[in-house]
Length: 117
Length: 117
DNA sequence: CCGCTGGATCGATAGCCTTCGATCCATGTC
DNA sequence: GACATGGATCGAAGGCTATCGATCCAGCGG
Image (tube, rainbow over all chains, first blue to last red):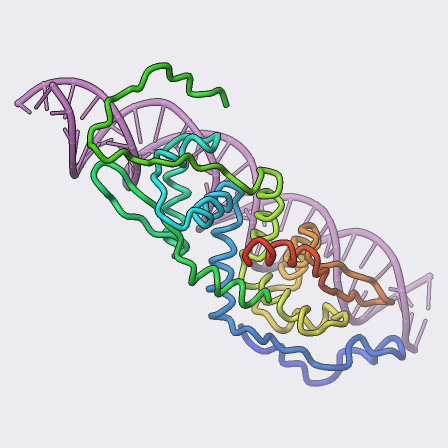
């Protein structure tokens, strides 16, 4: 919003030790933070995290009909989670005949990994 | 919850190509997935991610009074985010005189990093 | 063409999550 | 003791999320 606009020091530091000597800046700009947070949020659900985990170790594509019985949620719920992962750019899918196959897009994960490392 | 209890194959596979040949298992157990997802969820907000970022590069402890002006949210809101990070075990705080200083607890981050790597 | 199947979508419900202003508390100054 | 300050907490408002059953749609089999 608007700057604090503080002309004179509101207080004479109560104690000899000042609260903080060096100024601290953000570092990761707001945009990158938003992108990273989006990825983290997509992983912020146990089911989605396990989905990504399964898809990661199966480097190939995995059929949804194999994923559904792994979790204690309904098929529409799982479909919803897969959509969230797709929207976040963490996975993609491909329809073959009657079935849908999902696979990981590692780039987005790498982004978060880089920040963490 | 209960097993599907499916005695006979519901269908004769419609197409020659079966939907999925190998069985897929979870891998990360539910408990670990929950712990990891908790960390990811804590990072799933741009402000919190930037907070962790600032605290990480400042290996030392940082005063809240330095953090507040970095973001366009009110002081109670920032306090709320710091609490979420504390609850997730990503940071801890220490009160010194009138001020509170926050610092990162790297272990939880390392947990997620290990899973990603 | 009819019926079945895998999977996505819809609509509703209930529980979180973010945000704020107001308030409270502990500490320190005068 | 009276007062200011940094920061946490409270309560409310509004938006987002997970979950489900019901439904829809596209392929395939017969």
